Amino acid sequence: MRALVQRVTSASVHIGEETAAAIGHGLCVFVGVTHSDGAGEAERMAARLWNLRIFQDAEGLTNLSAADLGREVLVVSQFTLYADTVKGRRPSFIHAAPPEHAEPLIDVVVAALRDLGATVATGRFRASMRVELVNDGPFTLLLETGA
Image (cartoon, rainbow, N blue to C red; front, side, top):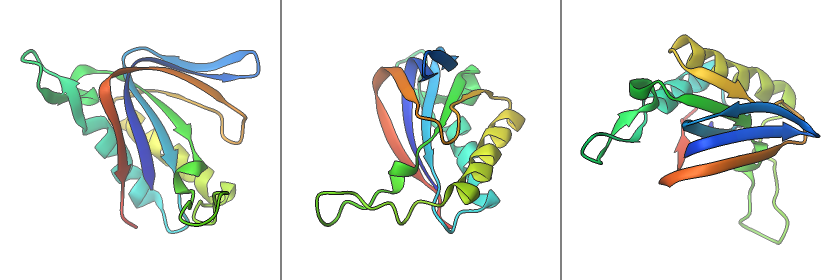
């Protein structure tokens, strides 16, 4: 499982003319699932996201997590995190899990985050989404869990 994590001052998901989800200060997380991922990877990813120390403390050091500060989390499914761009000019998505496998695992990530105490907003699986976000500082990280 892969997650692209961005520390944001705000983020939202729009589907058509509707705002499907929105958060203030927190994390905007794009989550990709591969074929070998299971519930264990999803639960580990949720714990890593919630406890990732990328927020500044009083001294300006990145010592605090979303859990420490009670920040919101926006989770958006993103199969393109498993794009293979090694050859050619068109990405291959053979490493991305099919929707039937990926959707329940995205749900596990969301449920596990909520169980840990997070306020979670989500995109809509299989929808054509427009995501707007305002980065908060230099943090954009790629997290991975092993299968």
